[in-house]
Length: 91
Image (cartoon, rainbow, N blue to C red; front, side, top):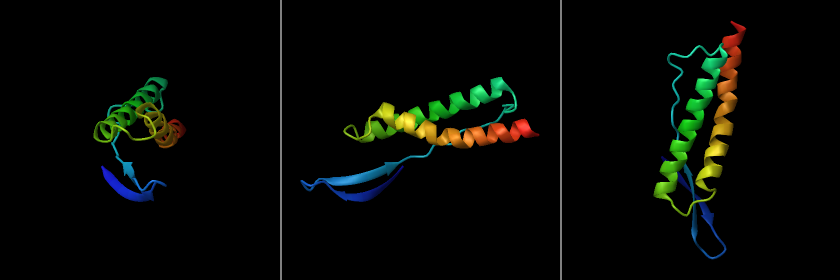
């Protein structure tokens, strides 16, 4: 987990930018297959949810919400997942 100061609110409360990275394994997956691609996407969503849950535990008043955090994290990670799927399908 990493944190970075992002300034202060108008009332002087510190704003902290928090990030956490989780790895997602593709071991045992045939990404060229529909089943393999779906499993990768499931793993990505699971990792995003777990990371945001951990952030939420440490920073219960954080924004965005745990659910919005997980959606944004998964959406961002899915770009790479789709690239891996496309590369596997092209082989």
